[in-house]
Length: 271
Image (cartoon, rainbow, N blue to C red; front, side):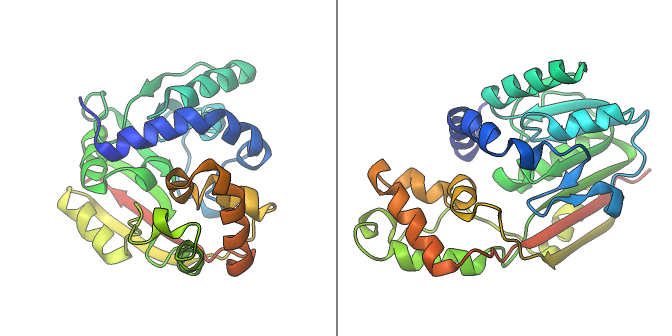
């Protein structure tokens, strides 16, 4: 199955940046318990996945499999999917260190090469739902779940880092960045709760619960974090010699706090 343009760009980026990302954020994403998103909220507090022991669980966008490894230790039968070969190489290394072995699938979440109805839980902590077409990934999740199966995901929602993006536009409108950034709208599509619920219902989900939750966060190292996460698309358009200046300028305008808005998704396939 051919990749969409966005999935192709995403694959190339993560193959290129995976080593740096895993090294830089090893402590942040390698906590000893499952934690959600950049907010690092423990699953033990939210209990959105419930008891996964003995259940078939698919992670869409598993990266280096930190989440999947933790769920496997809780007794889940895990499959990890990621669009990046290099991310999956890191996943295999982490699995070997943990003394675990479970299937890893190299594919985009838009077209998952797995049979219908194979999972009790499909989940995504940012990962695939943040990077690919939801009009393709949501029906795929429905196809992959058994009757009564659970879809859980969290990603940026409407209004996410709006203040930060405004700062980036302000800086990007000035020289020497304007020739590269003025008129460019970026790849972001931060959906609202209502439109997301409608999309889930059209795909056949029931018991749909979606909501937006403002959750400001201050990274431990704001410039490093926004360079790796928030400003990645900007930097892809800028010459390398402008990267440091642009990151510094945007951080100076925006401040260190990021105005995150979390979109929470909880839906079930009818029994």
